[in-house]
Length: 120
Image (cartoon, rainbow, N blue to C red; front, side, top):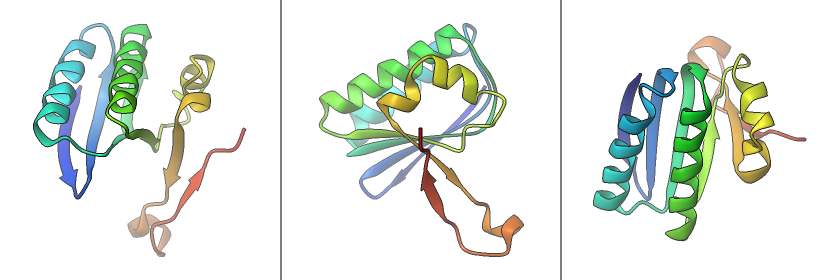
């Protein structure tokens, strides 16, 4: 797993790529929690565009960050989850708990960046 954290105004954006699993979930937890404590962002955006696999440990790490951000009075948004992992996220109930958005890449689409909320 690779994790890049970026502060954008009142938001913390976590760009995750690779596997989010039993081997990497603790590092994800630790690094995101440290950034949440240090920067006190209003919202957490987890950009999952590069995630290739998620297991129950990864789901637990995501849910734990969701609970923490909610306790801080903010919200958590999952961005760009790949089609291959969407069924796992949906079965775990994450699509009901938090906002999920797909953003178009302006470099590939030729247009501006747009977002849509996943409808159930």
